[in-house]
Amino acid sequence: MSALKSLFTLIAAAALAMLAACSTNTVQGVKQDAHLVKEKAVEVKDKVVDKAIEVKDVVVDKSIEVKDKAVEGGKAAGQAVGSGLEKAGEAVKGATN
Image (cartoon, rainbow, N blue to C red; front, side, top):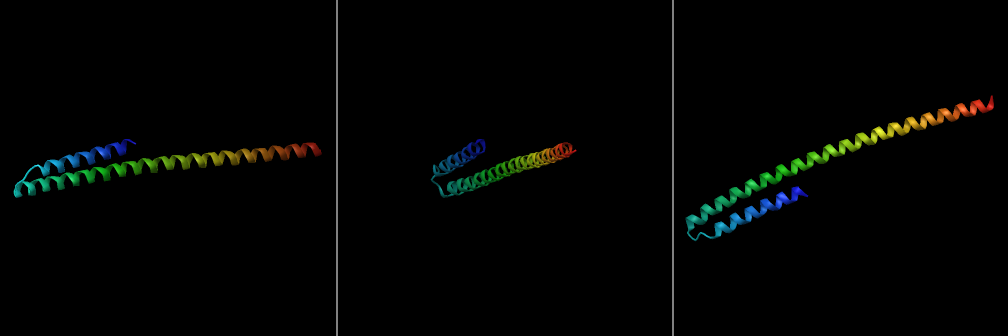
């Protein structure tokens, strides 16, 4: 959720820069303000992309952890079943002797 909060903060900063650009009424001023707004938009885009990459990396790391734990659980379950079958076989063998 903090990633979305950061994104909204960046968007708000870009919107404020756009509003500031609108306050100048000369053609040259408007061109300069538009250039600043464009630069700010590029900065915001770069920060959003960086944040998206961070989030993706966290998700990938968590999925690998979950997969590893599932594999460990599957191995443990397989060993428990094998052990149970072995004990059942021994019990049957003992009962028939």
